[in-house]
Every structure is written in structure tokens, then in C-alpha cells.
Length: 174
Image 1 (cartoon, helix red, strand yellow):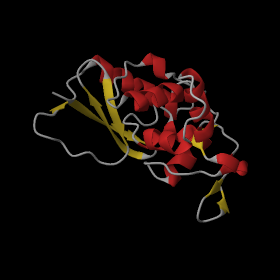
Image 2 (cartoon, rainbow, N blue to C red):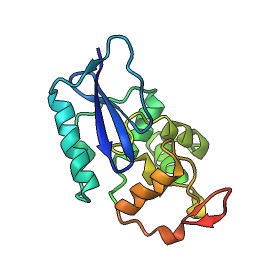
Image 3 (tube, one colour):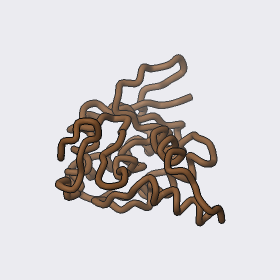
Image 4 (cartoon, rainbow, N blue to C red):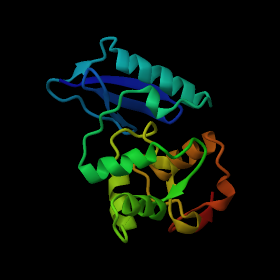
């Protein structure tokens, strides 16, 4: 059984999902209830998430370690998401940098940044696992499942200097 909670954020309604013990999803786009889903019934994990999100959107710096996380994914995806958890608040990294970390950890010569991008794009716990902090080489604000506007707003909230970034395809500076 999954438990769900809606949270009204500056980005719109977020939908959180829990297995009763851990956070398994945090989505920016509406998530329809499925048979068997239950509304939040005061679960401690969802109450903790509510407090975490309040702190985050107030500009305080809660850490992902404050929440029990259980994102479902392949071992590769989970390895990428663990690296994302180490990207500090207000900082960014690149797909290539994450690929280099994975290659070093796995004692491989190289790892493809595109594969990293695929894993980042499948992150089921947005904001908390900070996939919005991943950018392309040279300041390219490549893809974000929640939309480019939300990515820019999250990075701005964290105090990232946005003058060095641009939106691909549009060629416009942020």
C-alpha cells in the first residue's frame, strides 16, 4: 500500500508517496490515485517531509539525510541518485562530473554522461534528491522533468548565480 500527501508549494502542488516507512516519491506533476493508495493518515515520514519542504521553501537548508528515502530504481540509477545527494545546496554539478565519479568508484575508464542523464531523469524523489542541481557542460540548463521554469526557480531559491546559465534551444540566458 502506498500513502499519498499533497503539498502546496511555490512551484504548485507536489504529490508525495510513502510506503509507510520511507519516502518513495515526490512529484511535481499531478499523480492520479491508484487503487490501493491511501491518503496521508498522519504518517511520521510524511509529516517529516512536510516540515522538510517548509524549511526548504523558506530558504533554510534541510538535508536529504533528514528523511528516510527509498527510491525504486536499478542499481545504476540508485548509484547516480546517491551521488546527487552529495551535491550541496546552492551548488551545481554536471552529468560528466557524475559520470567521472561513477567511473572512478567502479574502477572503469569511463562512464557515459548520457547514461547518467537517463538516471537523473528517472529520479522519483524530486527536490529532496536534487536532480535540479545537474547542468550541462558550459552552463547549458539541460532537461528537467519538472520543467525548465521550475529548475530555474529552485536554483534561484538556493542562491545559485544564474547569470552563467542559458536555456538550450532558446539560446537565452537565464
